[in-house]
Length: 369
Image 1: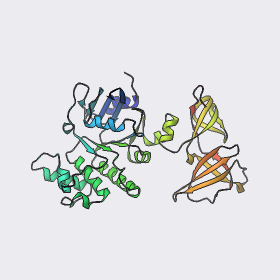
Image 2 (image 1 turned 60 degrees about the vertical axis):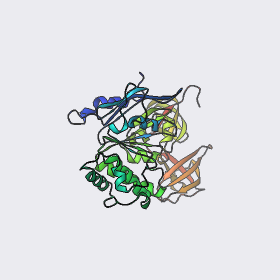
Image 3 (image 1 turned 135 degrees about the vertical axis):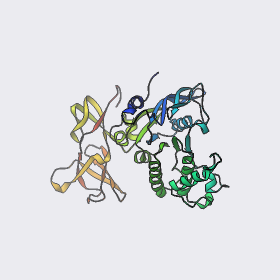
Image 4 (image 1 turned 45 degrees about the vertical axis):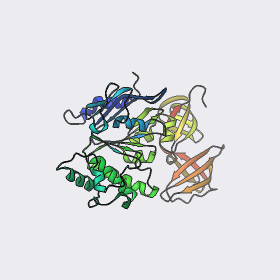
């Protein structure tokens, strides 16, 4: 079997080095594959989540991330591979436990609250009847900061409060894992960052393992401990947010997880010649390469500092906390440069563009540009 995500299995083999005793991973997917007819939607995906870890499945629409979540939840059965929750195999081609027996909580994109039930009854839905039921509901609501909201109806709540009710319902049974499927996509832009931070804090406080499916790069990088990027049904890179952003495995991943631009370069050992001059690079290479540059890696020096110039600012976008300049280099190449909110550089100014630190390069495929 071809391992598409060897990092996940290396982490599985070594996870006991960092955890006490024989604590198994909260989630372990090995080689899971799902086909619908002749179309393979998920292809040999390996994914490991440790107890208390927040992991994002990040990718464009149609990449297979939601189907992967459904395989974990038990809404679909894999055609190959296994899913284990808390060290117990819950899915394989031969057998598949129903969702209610997997100790997995689910937060849906549209929250899926019952409009005719109170908040408390929504949270209680799916809990076994008994003396602990009320206490579990009250504890879950307290965990998400909604003490005293049990008798309210869903339509009386804001979007952010409804999101927290959905999370409380997922947490109430004490699941091994909480799965979140694009949970913030229905929120207004201004509310999204606030609710995202609240959900992260709730999951941290509850020491809950969570798998977040999203197409939003900022969401994945800011919320999660690790990010698994999915492309065409398989995981192409799994890493910490910092590693993923600074050392993507391909130009496609680089462009998807942030603002990336590429310049042609000629690599010689640990340095590469570019239109911006010769700059140090990460690792070694020889010959034609593509040089990845994040806008914040570039620096602008105004003409009046007497260092010479190599470009002209053609426009800028001001965001308050920072600004993005577009600079036409001498030679018709345009680069984007991200600066702080101050500096006094304006469109039309002549500037010197320089590179901060070392750059990441990608080999040019034979016959490529």
